[in-house]
Image (cartoon, helix red, strand yellow):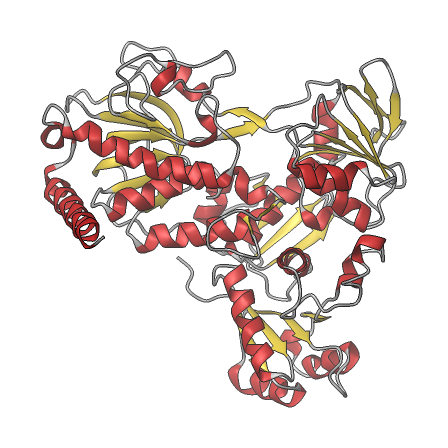
Length: 577
């Protein structure tokens, strides 16, 4: 796993604020960046000359600092050939990223990287900064259409892991290519054409080193899915002494990482927190507690262990030869995947990037939609936040289309509905995508045959449960009962009497998070479900002597000792009350 980190040099004359900003930036990226605070350009020259930060990606400076400008800073940096192509930026203000609309008058011109800035502006600015990185000596090169939906997926992967890259924009490229910048680099033995994230993990060497041999160890608990529910469960289980493996075929964090919503009701973050930041911290915490996280494994089937009664085998696809993992207990936290519009030419417009599932805050730029406007399909918080961000960036026109807007938060709904620049169309949906003579999106057709001009469509309608892999046929496959035809997993009360909370129809298999029937799509609730599912697992082990039969002998005593210690502490606390 890579240990050196990309470096940002931060020039600010106020020592107190400089220290605070340095900590804020490192906290934002869960320490995958190193931020070095400097007082002025003299210290900048000293660092460049003596320290030689090999992975320097950007220099930020206080715009009000006398004698410091983008030109003078770039000139200093340009004295060192290896740093000439680095990003040099003023610390942004609200006016850099938003038009001076009425609702922004109070913050217009206010420095975003300051003690008075809102958390949302800070988060958005860090994302804008990250997407400007194009260092001279990147870790990888990417070539393809920078505006396509696939391009955004890769950029977000790189953002999550703090990987520096150079993007070679080629709008005519049929697919994204990923390659090493160095000839003969053994990590990339060939150019990857539209690689899977698992291939990137292996090529970049950023898979956390597991505590145990993944393909041979008999884990107490295997969690399928590394979203909020899965990581919360893994952290709780490992803290209680269970050997725990988390498998994932994407990057950790699930859909929460890609959500633009600022989570404002999560305990411990009074200013709110983005899903990216929260889940990066959670993944780091899990690793500290010796949870094995393997983001290159795709679950393909669940079956009983033929050699160990009461235990399971999870079949997996991987890029490194692993084909199965062993589990005493299983937690299904595999979340949801995007639900397609099922409209004509959808796949074609996905490739061109004219239709996109998910929205990134860095999408908010005035030229979006090529002057034809933007249509957002969805009626929840993410759709509303996207509309507000696009409006702030000067994108026009903006149209929201949804069957209902009832799931959108009341305050946000008022902001959207009261904005004359955002049209909202209820009781409708997109039934067709319209193209021009150049095979690019020109508009959409709604129910009732109304047509709307659009150069970009965002589909923000949620998703469908990622459970097809559990529906495979086979004599040895474990049968999991589903709540409905979409594939949501039935648990506890939806199975009838006698089932524990979060228990599925298969003994020792539990479910938590968005994949569970009737789940509320909230990060806080997913985290709570993950922790509560571990409590149900312990209750399950308490009956019929399952501690002895289900857990591996090597881990059994550790888990019991941890559990007894926690109970003793709880009893002591209750007695003192």
